Length: 317
Image (cartoon, rainbow, N blue to C red; front, side, top):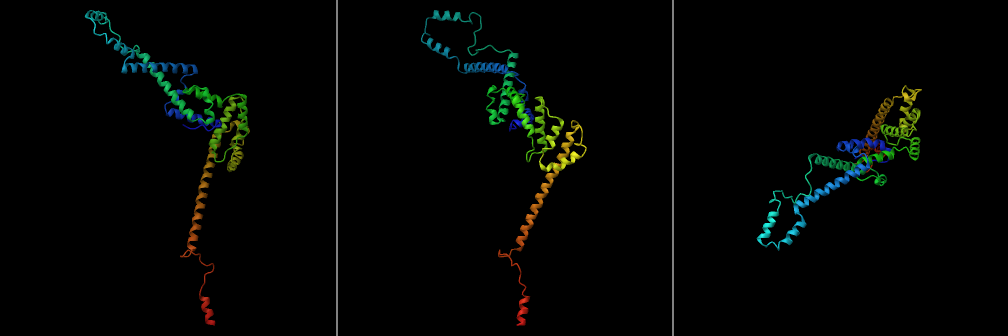
């Protein structure tokens, strides 16, 4: 399950979490039990069903303790006259033509439809509890401490709680969104696509709070708050046809993103070439040093002696 780093990353995390739950076959749990009352009622009934089934199982395995005790008390008086035994035998349901009730059956057999409904309800509860566990494990510690208001196991309730918390229209939350919008900056090492996702998330949340930024403000936040290595491509876009427009609402941001992505790939390729060039230079320097070293490990003299000059001096002497 993808981890939710912070509230500002909720818009990016939410679709990833939906895909993950879909792969686990738990996406329907986000739609089950629309109200808290419904969840509590169904889980209470399921607990009753489980308790009854457990009691019936134990009774079938070990019998009824009260009946065993009664049988033990009557054991001493079992040697009675034949008339009393005949009287008891004649009073049995079998002698009267009626069926004796089974001591191992505490509840009447369920109808097929009711049994199927119980099975479906139990499956829905289990699915919701599994989804709740996945979502809860992805929350930051500070957020996890606040979800106690949601009944444990109710996945839809937890999902809606997160939606309301990070997309609320309360005044304090709107002020926080406006503050985040005015301080938007691309982080170092953050790709343009991830930064664009953050900008779009804030734009959508502000629009829902009726504080939608203007198209020009959106353009400024998206392309004028990038890292310095994007200055060249931004200047080219502003002097070209894509951003040099009068109506910023008509800008095709997918085309702008495609050009910026191309620029990013060129930057990465250049970085790779620079690393390879630096590595090659370092290897060449090391190889040169090895060749200049003498066999015994000492460096050769700066000015090697020729020997011819000494012979000429000796001859002159």
